[in-house]
Image 1 (cartoon, rainbow over the protein chains, first blue to last red):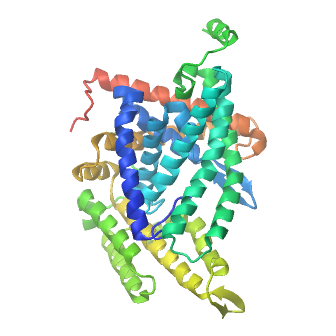
Image 2: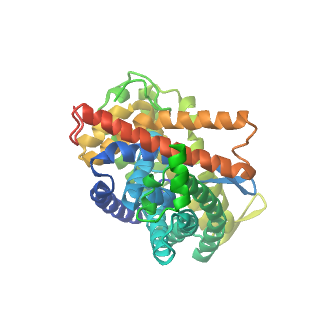
Image 3: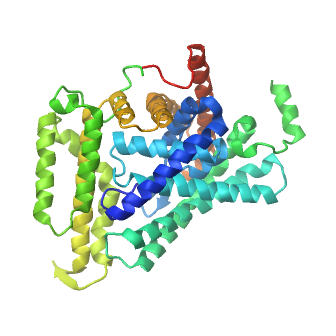
Length: 229
Length: 222
């Protein structure tokens, strides 16, 4: 669910818009380092993939459903800067062509869904990968932990923005409890999907997974690859 | 961009609003949304004025109102939240139909609903009257970063291809007795998504090679 127009007051919306513009600007430069001149077609196709993956709903309970946000997933698969670009593109297209998420709230949505989930997801992923054995088997479970933590992190930042520029007189404590509790549950779905998707891509095309670069592949798998090839 | 990749919201027409340059429509929409967000929520009459302006624009665009109404369902999860606000908000309470509701909460709920609905309706009107290719050209005229516009263009161009591919994968799953919505079958679903990622990425690589072979140097031809 995206933040619509009028949910946060104008100064907060403009401030998050500025943050989002700077983040996308930096990401545009840095993504070229991850994808070189293939950036436009590849980021566009990955954005289309993220959009398609977000269409799949999973039941959360009490008759409601959540869907993948995909920040941590995209960061592990294609690298953090490309992920910021892809998610921002998805949000831009949704806001401009599908009326999903208000235009004045575009910056807020990019900060929450594009920036925070990717930054926290990639941060946790890089940290855990650094301390764990350098084996390709750790990528999927570590990505799942990163995806899990990225969801309540986005909820926390949303609560912070709501406390600063919220337009409804609801106690901040109540918002925090509701948002955090709810997203700790939704995060489980995000983690489960991220775990299996990353695992599937690592098994099929480990060379494509940005987060698996420089990790040792078990010799058994290379032998099996040679047999199938 | 090839033709025949219109998006789901576009409503074909030849009204003045369809013909208006996309960059003007974009600026107009952003200005309208900002003014609506800045308007104090107690100015009820002004909101009626905004709605009237939008309805006149809808009339000019000759997009059937029912077409727009049906597509306003994107707002529903948010309406649920707005309806809950008067129950949980702080402040003095008033009795409405036997329910004890927060007075500032009611005003806030009105503000949320009014601003959100006006924003959604205005965005829908832009989407219904603007072709994606025109929208991208408009963004370029407004000096949006060229690379970002290119990425958006590729996403829009291949959106139906990728979602169509996912749709066929889901049909294949169902025809083999797998229910994509059931948590029991999540591993199958996620492996499908993994395959979809590999296919999308490889398609991107092929598109890039095809572009190179046609002389792509980092800028799109006009």
